[in-house]
Every structure is written in structure tokens, then in C-alpha cells.
View 1 (cartoon, rainbow, N blue to C red):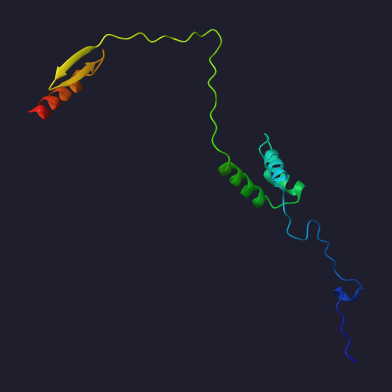
View 2: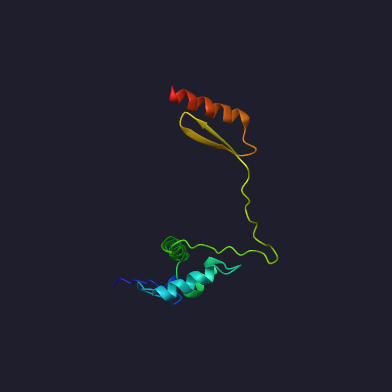
Amino acid sequence: MVDVNDDAGGRGYRRVEVLTGPGRRRRWSEEAKAQIVAETLAPGAVIAEVARRWQVCSQQVFTWRREMRHSVAPSFVPIVAEPGMAPQESTPSPCIEIQVAGTLVRVAPGTDPVLLVMVLRALRASAA
């Protein structure tokens, strides 16, 4: 007779492993994904803890965050002026107008003189 004893050390019990959590592939609604991602964006939130609470792999949460970041169109932030600050009206500053070789060049105050000379010489050379 062959005696096969597959218990642990002959003590009469077997090792039993209990797996908790989902045992099949789950489908998450967009609302649930958005809620999970929103929880991870809260100040001081730890993604691993949020993922554990929802019984989902933290890598999956990172993937959802990346997908949501790329799927949202960039939005513009409105500019709000501080109270008490009046908008400054731009006053036209005086400028010099120079006509060279059929081209009108307007020179504003503070223009670099070296740059102005280079532009005028280039215009004169192109007309010749």
C-alpha cells in the first residue's frame, strides 16, 4: 500500500490561502475612474492608499491619471485685475519716420543706433 501524505508535517492540516478582492476583470465606469483620480489629486493623497481602498492596482490609477490629463483640452485662465488698479492708457510715443529706397522706417525712441544704421544701410544696398 502507498501512503501519500500531503499535509504539512503530518499535523493534519493543509495550507489555505484566502485571496481577497476581485477575481475577474472589472470594468470601471468613467464616473468611477474620475472619482478615483480626483481622490489622488487631493492635497496629501497617497496614490497607493487610494488604489488599495478601491481595490485596484496603483499602476492602473497612474494610467487613468495620464489618460485624463491628455484627454482634457487645455483651458484658459481668466486674468483678473487687482482692485484699485486702473488700466493704463497707452499714449502714442513720438517717433521718427525715415523714407529710404521707397520704404518707410519708423524709429521709436530708445532704438539702438547701431541697429538703425545697419537697417538703413541694408535698405539702401537693396535698392541699388
